[in-house]
Length: 233
Image (cartoon, rainbow, N blue to C red):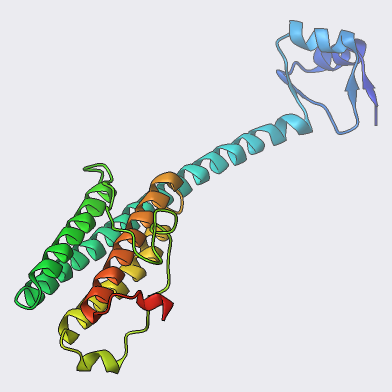
């Protein structure tokens, strides 16, 4: 096999039979004169590289299309997860209303506090739906809760057991505890919904949920009674 294709070699081939393409075999090289000859004659040069190039281009296009498809799937998934989160929030809003209605006759002040916290859940849902800005959750410091830890995930001040069924405000205590448990489940919904999204907003929403949970813990302590913080006992 000829390693270097010269201009004379190409002229002889063309003289015998004209051609408009010339295939360069693997390992062969054109001399400068041969390359100029092909250019002057407007003869298309075909090499192994030129055959692979369209394949590579097709592969690159497919990769771009695949990335776009993945982005579309992720976008649809994020939308579905946020919609699921909003449905969960609506359910919790309804539970807040039912709870406040049921304890209204027993403790008006506590019922009003529950209603106020329920509005904060509504605010979070509006933020997830892109309809508003996140509002702060106001709180009162107590023996073991302050501005440094109120937005963090704290353990319950004490465990709610069958003992609390015997107390005068057992209905208030148990129903408020149900709200607190439902809110704790929200953490996972929020993390999933904002996995590929705004981390700052996700963290602020979680902080608000933690603040609402901790506020409920304070209300439960108040319903149980006693001036000493139950967490310290």
